[in-house]
Image (cartoon, rainbow, N blue to C red; front, side, top):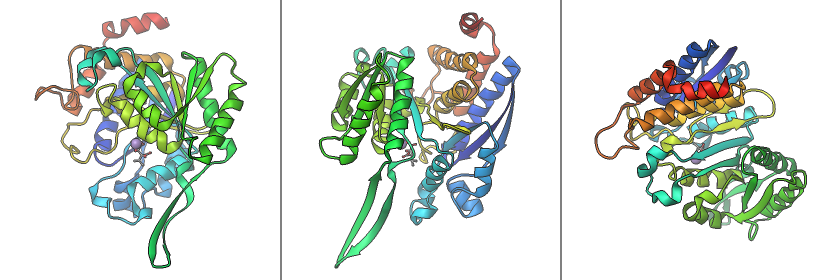
Length: 369
Ligand code: IPM
Ligand code: MN
């Protein structure tokens, strides 16, 4: 298979972890005889510094000409005081809109060997396995107006939560399609006791549910969902929610796995290249120190192989390699107890070594042969 992957490293640890993800894709390419061609583009603060805008046209072109996009992260203190159109985050929001990446899948998976890394007790998190389906191109993030105003002598400010019914419908459908291949339970999270947008969201969820008689639908208020995620995380299978709620709940959910550094994501479109990125941000406090956990980016590369290239076995091999490396006791700083941990590059080497080695992944190879 020959495929083009656009790589947008972005800022902070984004550059370090995407390097790791590319190394893993190369190892998969060699092991399974695929040609992956990598093209690079600027985004975020790096793009502001070099091109004067957080998302240059050339980056959009690079993405559109690729079969999939791998992204690191954007942002950093250097640009925090910039006006809103010159903020790194604008670049990320713009590429999501530009490629119509409306469906953000954020799987939350428990790893046995990381049970002690989570701040929660093992009995609560053991066996946790759910996926957050976050709407990614609408809601509060994109609604207009979004601006400061003066009313009388008062400074006022407005952000807008806007959705078209069709936008709600397609993300709910994505959740049901996801649930069909899982435990067949969709929890739709909203704030219907307060927000009109949430009441429409519920109506649409009920309508879509009629097309999926085998899938159970329930509604949960977002405040209650935030509580249940900690109280009984095993309860969830597929969680579908609005853009902002999904942003917040997914960071919360990451701690069930031990670290935000473990959570991958896929941002899917109906047509064209999809994009894959770790859920974590640019982590300026540890950037440039070879200290970041590359696993979220590496697992995002696995999602890329699965969702964009249909390479299920290769994706499973990456996931298995991550699991064996953790099982062998390797940890990055975020997961380690004390000062004994691997740098980003050593963790990547450990994972690529497993991918290159027959015996460590033999169970996967047998399962797919
Ligand atoms: C994420 C990030 C982004 C978001 C930021 C960087 C704009 O937090 O992908 O979760 O809020 O969507
Ligand atoms: Mn976030």
